[in-house]
Amino acid sequence: MHEHDSFFDHLLSQKPKFLAGNLFSEAVVAKNLQYFNKPPLLGQATPPHQDGFYFMLEPCHALTMWLALDDVDEENGYVRGSHARGMRPHGRTETLGFSQGVTDFGGEGDHREEIACTAKSGDLLAHHALTIHRADANTSATRSRRALGFIYYAESAREDVTTHRAYKQKLKNELAEVRGIYMKKNMQMKKLLTTLGIASALLGQVAADKSMPQGYTIPTIDLAGQTHRQTVVDREKGQYLGHPTTVLLEDGRTMLIVYPKGHGRGGIVYKRSRDGGRTWSKRLPTPKSWETSKEVPTIHRVVDAKGKKRLIMWSGLYPARLAVSEDDGEKWSELKPVGDWGGIVVMGCLEELKTGKGHYMAMFHDDGRFFTETDKRVNPVVFNLYKTYSKDGGLTWSKPESIFARSDVHLCEPGIIRSPDGKQLCVLLRENSRRKNSFVIFSNDEGRTWTKPRELSAALTGDRHTGKYTADGRLFISFRDRTHESPTPGDWVAWVGTYDDIVKGREGQYRVRLMDNTKGADCAYPPVEILPDDTLVTTTYGHWTKCELPYIVSVRLKLSELDALAKEKDFLK
Image 1 (cartoon, helix red, strand yellow):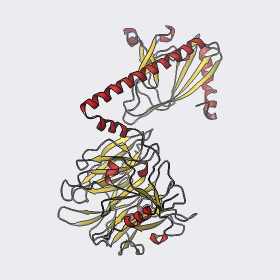
Image 2 (cartoon, rainbow, N blue to C red):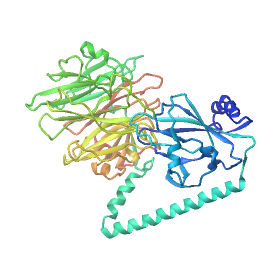
Image 3 (cartoon, helix red, strand yellow):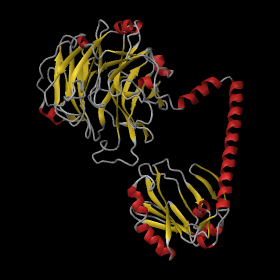
Image 4 (cartoon, rainbow, N blue to C red):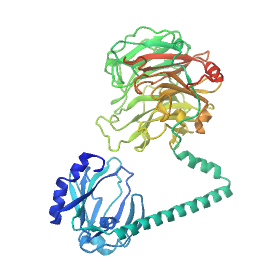
């Protein structure tokens, strides 16, 4: 760290170095500054070892300082007096990141002399390079164990070049041995699986767990310049208009839309179209509490067990609030809390279930900030995907249950698509850390259990996926392009393919650029509606005009029109 940032170089050479010199009673040389982190539930145990084994100094006059960045319980252990007993034998461990450990550790003397060292954030622990020390795994579900490590050599210490060279060769030989063992076991497993007749299925699953390519090969059709397809839903000079959701009523013509005056947070604007989105009303009156919306509003059609139709509209963060209309949106209730919980983009998606009439499941995510009244974020950030159920046609909702929580990838903003035969639920997920492609999960039991998340094709990588089936059974999925390697980064795009393409990890048929976003990736929370004549109407916000704030636009198309363009190879170059 000190070699790459002047702040850490300055830190290494200041007070800790002065303290090290006092402890040794001689001048010291600053050698290294390291960052350690054991994330919640992920950090492995550190085997007993002596730092001096890695340093290979003669004499072994060096010390390590450990600056706690988080509070540490009785999880760090030191063996008293071990620095005065010389170097113990070390050998290969099975712990990633700690290749060597004391091989004869564990005798009565070690355990009798071991002491636990707790530390508060900001405490500094210092130990000699010959002191045996270890650390337990981080079993906390929420707390990280972070620290900075400072290493100093006494000026009298000299590196044993011959021993160090031999050590590096030993590591090289051990690595080759491990690779050989792995390859041999892998070949044996392949032979066994082939014998059992299940090799292709299992190896396919192994392949699915590997990282997917970050670019795609299917063509992109560009509709950005076809302004005849575009309808401006709302635009206000000097006002940010964002993040719409829509609902199409059963007459196939009436469409309702809600969106915030601001980036997520802001008073909710409400409009109606009576001609399938070709024209829109003026802004309609709304209840007073809609002005207090803290997050993206989402609107959904629900029907209870007696066939009563309602519209519900969510507003997220804490607490999640709900408004209800009993008359197809002519009048609405105030926003009211549904429970002692909240989240981000509540509800990102909502699906009618086959478990009973009036049964629904909704999904959303949170990163620790808004699920409860107080911010409970941890470091590294953990993204939780939640599901909640309603059995009364969407009026009341159960306490949310976590489907999974991960910090290595940030999976969020779920979008549900049901399989063509109705038996499976598929959820497409934004990957917000941008380390991977988007992800997908499946459920074969109406959301009770879910498959392990796996990466999608790069062609489907983006944010806030919303999809509809067309008459021929293909899927049209609209989203914000966040593909790592793409000709349309940050634009409003769509994907055309089949459900089977998603299941099998294929790229699909083609992509579509719907509109060109002129500022970064600030666009496209894009609802999709399909009209009785198979016309797709997809709507979203974006920076459609340079140097202007976002406004709301819809785009109309049919897949037959896109197929004609594809046949002519009219693709984005």
